[in-house]
Image (cartoon, rainbow over all chains, first blue to last red; front, side, top):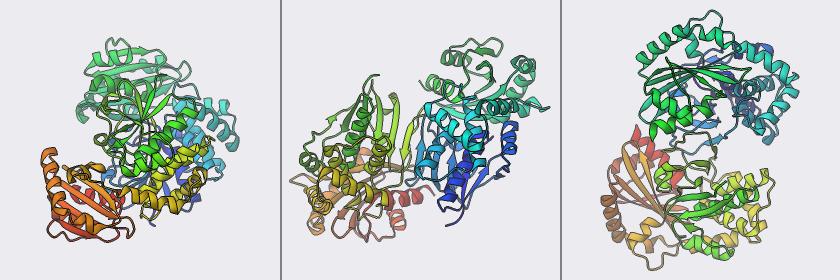
Length: 307
Length: 307
């Protein structure tokens, strides 16, 4: 059997990278020739985690053909590898909504409404009676911390809490101490221009007939980020124009307070206000308790734009 | 929490009914107010199985709203309840390709390339540490026998074999003896007109821009069925016209020999020939070793009609 590529979504975050490494290692232990790859380079948070556990970043690919693939942490085709329509999808392990995904033949698909793909993978290792290597446990733990904001996001489930405790033990780190260091590393925007920052963790969604881009960045100092709001508005408007999105939302999430500021470019703004229960003034809104794109933005806005 | 409906596909077969009962009972054991329902009445095979294990046929529904739903043995919306777009899908347990399925929010989805949905459910009971009641084991076993032609179909996996042995023990039946009786019961077409027979186990698929209807019936006497071929052609042509299908295929599957005769109405016939490696003469072809719509018809024809 030829090599199978394990792929996370575009603009990979720590779960996209961590779950690709986690599933590839599990498949290898089960005798499958699998390789974790990525659709981009790691951001600062993921780079911190890979470095901490002595792991190399997965090879970046542009196309998957002629290999079969396994998808982790996504299923929507516009978030996947460019030639996804031309390759066979063997497995999907994910924790997102299902959309724009189809196959010609039956496959293995495991999607659960939990906080992180790596929490599903942790149980899959147990079910297969495969031990998780310490470095793999470390990057999988990092993914859970990242996706759940150290188990504080409303997406967090018991499944995530149990997996995080187990992985921290295997990886030999203190969950809270390591978690805080990881999240802080993720807020380091360096000296990147706004146009780069808005693409670090951004996904495109089809909602009814609208194309909606939702980007997110995490911070421990919202005021400092918001001081650059005009740069962000400009970069978002330019990308919206170029890519033909109807709406562009940027969540600036305070990982300590667990709230987000939202910047909104495009139309319809009133749909965003209704969907999220917020008031947008001059393109800005404060989202009390909003930290999850997947649970607190996408379903509500999809509902509003398709009804 | 209000009641959740567990729904198999339209034109329910034994797996659609059996997996709905199986999942509903599992959810009930876990404290969920779930009810198995059906999108039609049981055919003769399913009726034999329900009667054998003293189970009532699930209530037939036309619409699911206002209830949330769990889907078993299907995911494609055209095979589901009429108002599927208006209700929330909580879970999907299936063993088919993924197509025409999307959700606004994350859900629990477990799809595996095994012979029968009830084989996945058997493991889910074990994972949840819930004992399978004997009558439920009986209908779940019947689903596996039906979908795998008593573990003879090429769709059969070790997962199906293990589940079948386990369920037969719980249900207190001899696998082979009961299995042969069940499959024979499924070949009883009674005095139904051809127009009814072609709808007993029929599914519609979108393949590229084509709508393709694929019906299947099982028999222990292919010659007797083929003697009525003109009736079938007439009924298939009428339904194709009414429903606007491009192609209508009928598989007449010999459950002893594990081969099928195929009747083909509509266009493009050459695509059917290329996809399945058969020769169609006067609308008829013999499909050596073809018994599985899911594995031996749909992927190949989808590939041919979308490339």
